Image 1 (cartoon, helix red, strand yellow):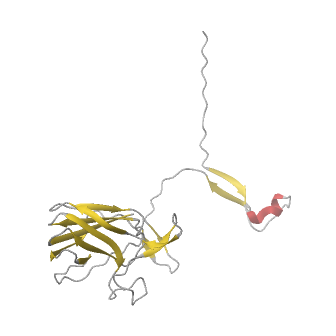
Image 2 (image 1 turned 90 degrees about the horizontal axis):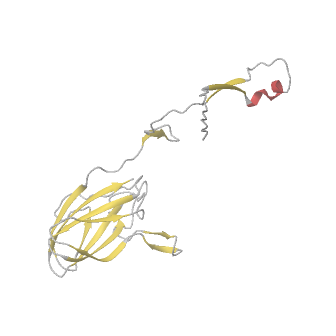
Image 3 (image 1 turned 45 degrees about the vertical axis):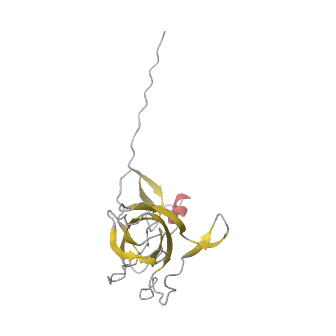
Length: 207
């Protein structure tokens, strides 16, 4: 039985010359031109690292990356059944926090209650003391609304009326895509567990 062996060579061409767009007349046969019509066209593969961009004002903007750890920890104590909290914003007198989702697609909401049972969670507008980009006097604590493609109507961007949470551990809820680029975000959490509960919260944003 006769075997056949084939080989082929790949020549890596890094540069070649081509006529520039402004030299079509020279290409057509004109002997002289004031501008050299030959330009070098690089033809090689080179890895690049994208760390940011320059905006229309000439300012450097770095690329957004996912949070590496949870942040904005807060603990609201002795929340009665049926009562609500806003997170990140502690009822214990700590300064209010807001979540800026600019450049982020997803978010992890972590809740640690001391009383097991159902808790409602809803994405709402942050406090009026903050601005949504350059807009002030926002409708604080109102539900965030947006266009739902599948249902072809305006709906709440995130509303979970009854999520069963385990006591004394971190219950982590992954919210995908719904809240991307929201600039003034809080969560309204309602204790429907049937008893008083301390509620700890934390957050992680993902690109």
